[in-house]
Image (tube, rainbow, N blue to C red; front, side, top):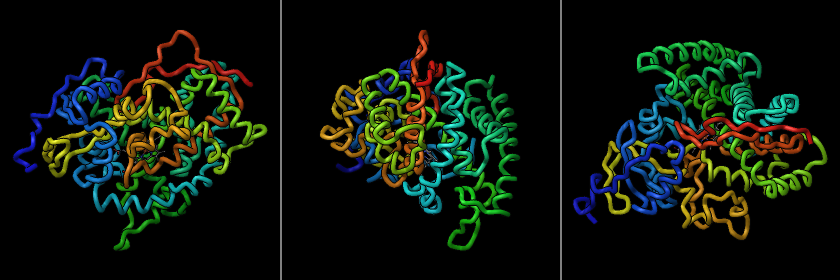
Length: 437
Ligand code: HEM
């Protein structure tokens, strides 16, 4: 088909987003896929967006045609990540991205996780120690404390305590500001205050690393040189640190909370998870990397939580070069989403997609393997989440510590709501009663 024969942007089926879109995003978009196919468009409050849904579309955006799509236009400008946190790995394109990713990759290989596990284990152990005494906890809030402390110490060498607490609070305030600011002026004023505070905390950390290099990711970045022998600027280091701290905790917080929620709702499966734990451990030992690799029953539950509650609902991209998809021509300058949350709920790919059924990932079913790019909670292709190993090891360690120590039960009379703003979260938190085993 020549470009002139292709149907244009205006011909792409248009759908109206319902009022409950933030709380019913996945089911709604999956339904639109059934009605209109893998490409449709809608008006979001910040403009028109073309949705690309399903394994084929994911493969198109993430792999075969990825050069047509810009992270900088999508995450950076459209989602405002560059404005909020600077230009880090998530918001870079092309050559610049490849260079920076190459610098960071060594710190995120699976074997490197061995060096993070002692930090993860200590922080998890210390953070959960008081749960029984508290009696009732909000698992979403508790998970955030753990994942932020872990990211801060493992990636930037900051020790848990008042300083890390202040960092965490600044990030939470930045992420929530859109929901609480009274108007644009108020938003900009409060954002400037938060960013000034963040920079004033980060600059001395960077200077410290320059004087005394450390083995964490920030230390590695401070030592890195490009092919001309140039070091990264303060601005670049701040942006990388910000993105690693935000991307490294917000998503893991939500996924671990949803996983633990589903485990409380599925006691039969949880018993199997626990049996697996007791086949690996005899008491309260701390998991090693080898131990986490043996946790297959838990891993399938983790994949199922990733499928049902993907922390990133849709991957935003700017179209940098016009492309053809499914008979339509989408011009440069358009905003598109590859829809993770919708792709995960397609009944043609995942049997009974609304049901928590981790065995779909076990042999012989292995539903995700029948269609590459069907399960994309961590993205895919060359720009797959750099922290995928980090997150999975951390969440497995967290669940392993918690389940071998405590029984968790959902407290009654609460409404559990899956909600999406930038990333997904349980809108009212998830309150649980904790008793020692
Ligand atoms: C449950 C946890 C996590 C989930 C679900 C998640 C999800 C994702 C997704 C979907 C992408 C790709 C976005 C796209 O294609 O538009 C991504 C990229 C990224 N993630 Fe994660 N992430 C998680 C944890 C982490 C952690 C722990 C870190 C850092 C330690 C991290 C750092 C990043 C970075 C830097 C990128 C950009 C990579 C690039 O473009 O080269 N993420 N993540």
